[in-house]
Length: 205
Image (cartoon, rainbow, N blue to C red; front, side, top):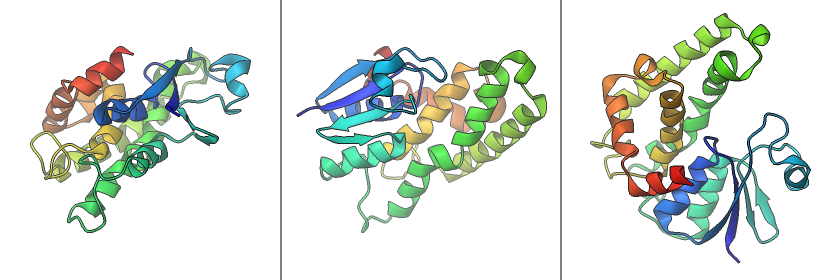
């Protein structure tokens, strides 16, 4: 049975969608209308009561976290040049940056978007947006100082870690904040990532 991915435009479901395109996997895509608190309506609520995306169905299994879904897909499909094995010299950095898309960036990205764009104006807090920006800037500087490849985090080349972090750079670019937050080499890195054919296919969907 093919994987089924529940997806909404511009959301974290782009991570597993991009990965599946990079891997050439067969999958079914259920595209939902994004609406805070009611994405997908009652039908999707029966699948994921949180009504957030992504959600991945594999037979009777349901997974809801974007980075965990990426690890699951890579593990289910066996060895891939998009991941690292434990005996690889870059296994540690690979895991670090695979999860950094959420642990270093995720909360601050969400706070920045919320207090710049998504929340009603009377609920937005400029101090929270400023704090989120400062933390995103620190994380982006760390990323810029940690990159080992020309257009990849790892010396070995493009991996799922680039997808995890690349989604954050996409969001920051989308809201016009990337140039202010990220150092020049990280901006150039994102420019290279978005030229990948698999990204272009994923974003077009």
